[in-house]
Amino acid sequence: MSATEVQDLLARREQLRARSARLREQIAQRAQVMRPALHLADRVRAGAGWARGHRAWLALAGAAVLGALAARPRHALSLGLRVWSGWQLLRRVRPVLALFGRR
Image 1 (tube, rainbow, N blue to C red):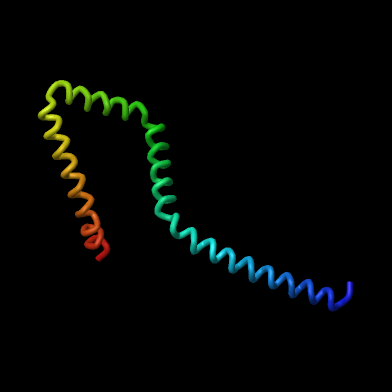
Image 2 (cartoon, helix red, strand yellow):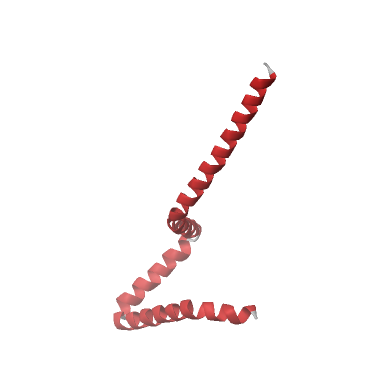
């Protein structure tokens, strides 16, 4: 192999590396659109894994909820609404508390 052929191969290799870098950058930019969906899928998968590891607790909680609904539906609904409201309040207050925690 002559020196010019070696130089040509080295130049071609650098061109291919540069092209690969540009293509990787394009793929990374286009993949940003999928990031929220993939994040949600990861959270669902983690939740399913947690549920698989805590089947007995989930069954017990489900039985308790069904028992409460069967015994006193109005009280169960009232308690459910209070729990839901508390959860929503906690979701809104948590970022504010985090700001105070940083200082």
